[in-house]
Each structure stands twice: as structure tokens, then as C-alpha cells.
Image 1: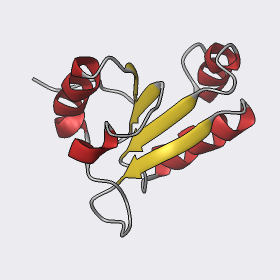
Image 2: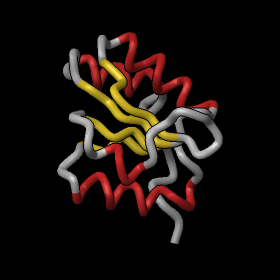
Image 3: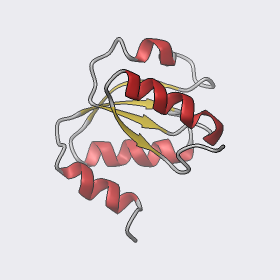
Length: 101
């Protein structure tokens, strides 16, 4: 499979010791991304999920230093979070679909 979890792992192996922030950190796919990040030696420095207590709201995420923004939120929020990440010069990993029209 070209674009599964294995693809993410192979791609990110080149990025060991990088830092990550996750939006939508409580869902199924976020758990898989967290596992992949751990396997490659990455460090999650901030996360946000509106349904989980003690997570960092998106407007404050960018106060943290991190390399990658991982978007695992519902599809209808992807565009907004991708835009926020790009405006803050972050590399984006977005679970599919990137956004809906």
C-alpha cells in the first residue's frame, strides 16, 4: 500500500527527532499517527481535541515550537487548520481528505 501508515513511517524516518503538534488528537487516526511518530523518534509537543480536557486550543498551538502540524480532525475543519499551519510556516500532515468543497 503506497499511502498507508507504512508510507508515513518511511517518509518520516528521514525526520527523526522532529517535533509535532496534533489537532484532533482523540480520534482513531490520531492514535495511529501518534504511534508512527513515536516509532520514528519524534516528539509530540502540543495537541488539541475539543472533546478532551487539558489540550491546547489551535490559536495557542503556534506558541509552541514544532516542525509538523498533524491534522486528524473532522474533514470539514481540514481547510481551516491547513491554512493556519501554512500561515505559521509549518509542514502539514493531513489525514484524508485534505478538505471538502
